[in-house]
Length: 582
Image 1 (tube, rainbow, N blue to C red):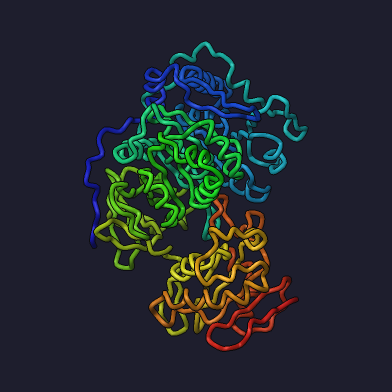
Image 2 (cartoon, rainbow, N blue to C red):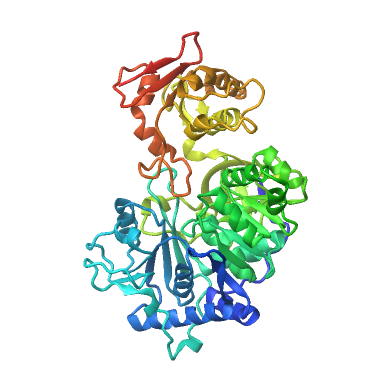
């Protein structure tokens, strides 16, 4: 098997998070570590001195309440100072932090809390309290507001009690915690089913910072404007610890990444030197720069050292806007199980579509005979918690982690192809990679928000198409698709013109057996509530195919009742688009 190794050696790793906090408090005492607006017109922050004092007091008060080495606490909250201080206190004292998505509904929240086996729980406020019941196995409850009371939880303790001055705070953070000690249990996004609980150690997290420092070059002078949620590895490990480790100032984006206008106002106030985000947000911010020269200068400010994109590659036309101004665009690849980064692109080299760079120091990558990417390095998880089925075969006999991603090694680095469990076989035994066609459809037609291709055991593939209703209602013709686009305004118009785009997408696929024969435009939206989107807003293909099973049956010729209007497009005949209703 061909293997890629990092060109640089890793170097010394700080042994644990307690040591990191002790060192940084000494280095950056009067410097702002974290700031937010919290409903105020301007940002206000906390210095490393006060931040460090809070964490030490929290550690002592938790111990006094009975929290001990190896205990777990679930953090059910949006990003906030209270959550950050508590999470670091838990990890630095030898405990295990378990962050979960702040907007999980009751069924999912209770499922994960119970699965975690935690006896301690901290919540942001009423939204989270409304989504748990009193029959949980939790013994200790904390809430980040002194004003909130709930008769179901008489022992609900205000977080401020943990911040109270403690006489033993000075030596509260033990520096003798072993680097392999588990400190973070993080649930995966669950794109292919129920989230899995990834067990990560101090070494997993801190080795990453030594490795990426060579590429990112983050320093204490950098300014982060951040919205990525901390229950997810991209925001809660990669970005957050890039700031903490290097003493940079972390500014919380007050709309949590939801409102481009507010993001832009925060951008103006913070003038970030680095920014970690996903393509959708970059596009929305760039669109706003076209309103004036001042807006353009604010966004592409002279201090912006680089931008980092994950979840998907930045579209070439958008990437070019940064690169022509001398602002590097960095991409990477990894999973929660690898804490999360395994590869980074070299900003000095021309970007190659699909290529996510070379291994970071300490990490090696190889491709198995079936195309699966395997990883070895100090960033690789201990294993999944309480999940024997998922742990079965997850490591090879010689200790490599099997990622479930399929790829190939090129001169430019690792090239991603698809998820292994997305590949399916047709009735004739031919293998189809659905993501190739899904990407082709989404790239060709901007009015398609999501496309999912299916066909396991069938004679040919079909697609379910979910339109971008917002764009249909209010299209921006300057960024709409290029020459020949009809710029539809309704689903009916989209169903008429999409046939051409689907034919073009089909033509981009080499194998005849992989081409679509039909597609259904579904007048419905994927969402968190119906589990068709993950908390990181990725499509959950397995759940989508299950929910819309009847639509697939319709495409394969079965007469089935449907709840909503569906437009069926036939691609191998001259039949007109059919409108199917319930």
